Every structure is written in structure tokens, then in C-alpha cells.
Amino acid sequence: MKKKILFFLLFCCIGFSQENTIKGIIKDAETNEVIPFVNIIFKDSKDDFSSGSMSNENGEFSIDKTKIVEFSHLNYESQNVELKESLNEIYLMPKVYILDEIIMSNISGKDHLKSLIKDAKIRAVKNTKLSTYGREIVKINNQYTKFADAKIDYFIKKGNGKSVLQIKQSRAFKADLIDSTSSVLNSMDSAYDVRDYVKNAYNFDGIERLVKSNDYTFDRYLRRDESGFEYEYIKVIPNPDSDKLLYEGYVIVDSKTNKIIEFKVELAKSHKKNSKLKNIIIAKFKIIDHSVWCKLKYTNDQYELVYYKNSFDIYIQMGKKVHDNVSSTCDLFVYDYKNDVDIPKEGYKGKTIFEAGTNFTENFWNMNNIYPLKESEQQFINSVKN
Image (cartoon, rainbow, N blue to C red; front, top):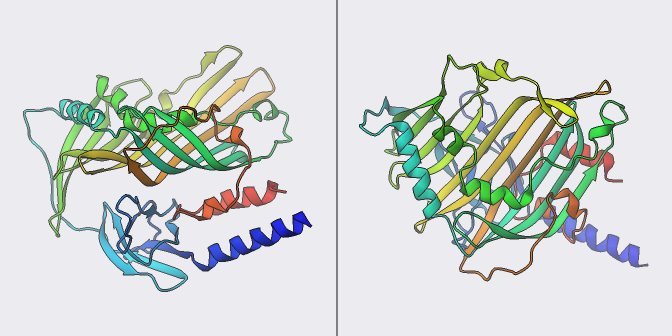
């Protein structure tokens, strides 16, 4: 009897969620290609603290709080839309830049970035609660082995992003690979510590190490579109003559506030050939790919995290049996924040979301305007959830 009641409640919850959900896909109006990670700003929301939503890697979005939204992307014209259909196709026009020129200044790009990062750390939030959706994915030889996601509250008690976190609801899925060469690595939950996601974002993990190195130059460009919106684009350029494993990427600075609003760095294609096998205790490994991406906004004289992603792909060699490619990805989407909150004394002690197991009372992965899962991710969940 209890099982029947539980099933009925879950069925009602799912039906209600789908009825109030508006889905869609965002495309380039000229090429018809999907546009990933488009910002979705709620125009009819009464909540001043909401971070809105964002489309996923395939340009797909799913929202349930509002119908009047603004689709915003750095390289596309913003568009206000009143969503009326249950499934929408949104087309954005690429921006036309009337100004795109290198900045000539007595301050080098490196020194400029050092100053911006130092200022950002000072202005990071304190005593703030970030309501987030976090996700961890592990693949071995391009096959999913672990998937975990959760509704997580980060209580930031220091300006450097150090937090007490509480996992409110979670899911964890696992599929052991039968292949004997991969079975040794099946116990790997994630390569990242969920307690450090916010801290690493506010410490500008990824970009600061490059700024401190002498292997990079940083070219500054000023860009202005037809509407008058202006920003600084700082290009991260690795030394072309170096035999080291170097990165490339960019930093976006809002010209009005002179604050960093986005950065992305990844292994430079030109330097991936420099990756070499290294010894780690009983194994050897080689880095194949690595990237860090962070999106922020600056409001009310403080930085607020919007999105953080860290992913890597490595080759592991362990004796004669293990010769595998392993990839691990973590990403964190902030959908709400509140200042001046009380910090809990105790928080989640685990290192990964996967350790929290499966414990939920609602379909949190379809709520709070969280960007939807990719088809391949959902297929994996469907294949192992029973």
C-alpha cells in the first residue's frame, strides 16, 4: 500500500512539473546551428536575486518560473521573448562589431589581469548562500561509468569562496565496465572535490596560474557592437616556441565596471603534442585535454558566480592490463543567491556528489530552471537506473 501511495505522489509530481515547463532550443539565425550556454534572464521575475537560467551545450533550455525572458549571449544580439508554446525555437542574430582593435597601453595585459584578479578576490561575496545544481561525470574509454547530480547549497563564509555546503537532494548512477582493462578504474567517483567548486571559481583557478607564468602573453582588444555595448577581450597566447604543455583561452572584462565576467582556458591545440607520460606511484599518466570555464556577474558591488566547469581527459597506463582514457567533468550552475545569511556549523563531509548517493523527494534535475541534460547523459541514466 505504501509503495502505491509513493508511486501516485511521484506520478503527480512529474505530471505537474511537465505541465509547467517550457522547453526550447536556441539557434544561430544565419547558420541554423545551435548556440550553447546562452544566458536566460527572467524579465517578469519578482526575485531580484535570481540568476536566471542557461541553455546547455546543445542549445537546449527548460524553464518553469517565468514566460517573459531575455536571451543574452556575448556574440549575439539580445532578444526579449514572451514564451507561449511548450516547445520553442529561438533564433539569435550574430553581433556586428563596429570596433574590434587592440588596446595600446602602458599597462601590459599580464599586469592588467593581475590587478583585475586581485580586485575580484577582494569583492567576492561573504556570508552568502548560493543555491546550485552540481553535476559530476566520469567516462572510461568514452563510456559513462559514473553520473551524479545534486541540489547543493553553498554557504560562503569568506571572500575566497571557502564554504560550508549542504547537499539537499542527489542522484548517483554507476555502470561497471566488463572490460578487464578498465575494471581497475571503476571505483573512481570524480577527480574533483565538490567542496572546492566555489572556492576554485572565486580564486580564478585556471587563469591565475597562467598569469604568473612567463610562458604566456596577453593581448587586449576593445570590442563594441552596434548597440554601443563594449567589452574588453583579453586573449591568452602561449609561447609558440615552448616545448611545455601550455594553455590558450580568453578573459572577458565588462568595460563599464572594469570587472571580469567570464574566462575560459584549455590546452592549446598547438602544444598538446608536448604532453608526456609521467609516473604516479604505481601507474603512468598523460594529459590529453583539460579546460576550465567560469562565468560571473558583477552586481551590487560584489561578484556572483553564475557557472563553473572543470574537465580533463587523461591516458592511464598501469602494468600490462590497464591502458585507458579517463575523463572527469564537474560543473556547477548557480540559480539563486542570498546575502547576509547564517552559516551552518556543520556541512557535507564527502568529497564527491556520488558519495551522497540517491536521495530525493522531487525531480530536482527538472526544477529551478536548471539547464537540461544532454541526450547521451539521459540515455546512460535510463540504462542503469533500474
